[in-house]
Image: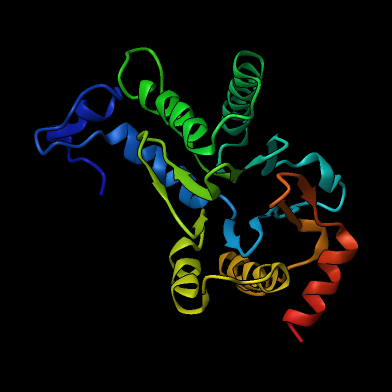
Length: 242
């Protein structure tokens, strides 16, 4: 709900609370996230799967030039929903933190530590004047010494850990699907099929999923980031939507 004229001043800066305890600029940032195409993350039996719908709006666009699924480190990845420019800046920060951890401690950064660093940046942009909140949410996950980890980090700086998560347009329908169909111990094939069904929840009427607009990757128990090829995605699509 947008503020009334009496409280309009409270939506001009991200650092000012309204009388009812709201930060309108942060809420507006979350609305941008809700307009972004859907992204998903799923923990499966041997790793973490990531998926994104890139929604190619013109036949002239080169699909690989659109980024929504990012490799952060060999053992970690991220999916964005919202402003892609904001996502790239945060992913760049995450990559720098990962490299610093490797240099200082000679080991990959723990996933939870990485997510808390990202969330700290999110939060700092709600607390100081002259900046705006990031108009993006991130799914961040991977495999470390504690096992498979999967988090969502939001514009407010809030974070939560999940077994399966969706962000972007159609999130509620995708989460309802996960609540119904997700189970621990899914194999990679089943996780990809579930991910495809979840991504279909973000489509507009008459839209269809196609290999060109989809991006899938996973981090397995060997802590290796791997992308799913377009031909493989096409094969999964054929099986999931017969």
